Amino acid sequence: MEPNLTPEWLSKPWMYTKPKNMELLTKWRETWVTYIVTYAQQHNIHVININDLKREDPFNKMDNESFEDIINAVVNQGYGKWLDKNQKNLRIYWRSFEKWAEHIVQIARKKEKSVIIGIRDIVDLEPVLSNMPEKDIEIILDKMIQQNLARWIDKKKKIIKID
Image (cartoon, rainbow, N blue to C red):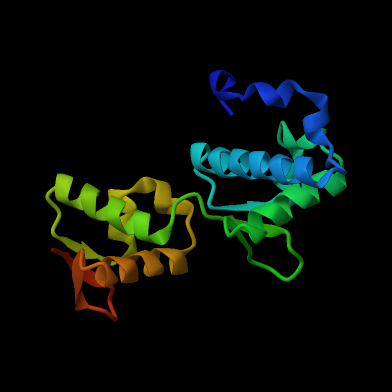
């Protein structure tokens, strides 16, 4: 994280070890889940290998049990999903598909782009989607239609018209 965005609690050694007290454990998990989601957003991370994340500061200061606990909390709270059976590659959701749909439509309207032709066009509109899994971008397209923000011109070719 950027130095000026680093929370003060990261300087507390006790934040790197999983608490035994249930009340403290719940708060500890919430704090770390929020941090990880914010970290992913600030670094434009949609998919990360947890071994790579574990090497990053501040995660490299945690013991394995604590690190695994917070990663599982990310998944259990709906902010993440394992992409492989070995649970090494984690998809992190720092914005809902519905919010992404609204965001893309706002950008398209601002740029006066009324027709979006496929995944490449969406990524051109919003480059932070460049490392998002393609199937997730397809879900965003579907959400745009479901939310009546756009309509299909050609579903097979993924061409939509912004309403």
